[in-house]
Image (cartoon, rainbow, N blue to C red; front, side, top):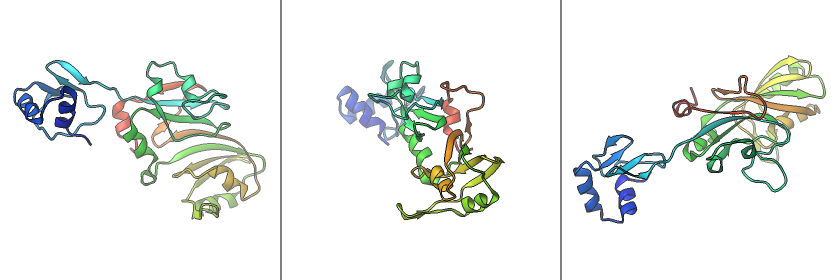
Length: 231
């Protein structure tokens, strides 16, 4: 994390001795509080003023979007409509995608301009549960439940998947809970039973759920809510 004195020194092109004097005079404000520690750490969303003038005033944005089928999880694409194309927001070009969905898959996608937040969500140690509703071509039986819970060996990667929860809703529909996201993992796991997946819809990531959010719609996540995503 960068230090306050370095930020100020770079911004006003002055020595750190001058920065210390400014601190002593109470001329530097960080997040609404008079700064007193020259070694204070800041981030890209720390709101900093010197003599009433902003040197940094970025806003963190967190969004939850219900991706339709046929829209790709990318910020730009010359041929296909992207999730950013669904947004009518002045800051949308600042955003990146947290956890992608396939072209034909639908449901919950998170977007942000906060790289630290997206890294936390995406890190394997977070073990954040992503929940999907899956429909298949053939009947899903109780044999699947044990196999998913046990994990499956993927020879291409040389790994065994973490335990996956499978709840059968009807003959060809189930809810799947993953704490990782291997390449086409859901399709490959059902493929072990020669059962083709017809649709995948993600309705929850951790504590975030689509609820009644319509296809193609989006809503903001409050910063306080984003800060406790694992609750």
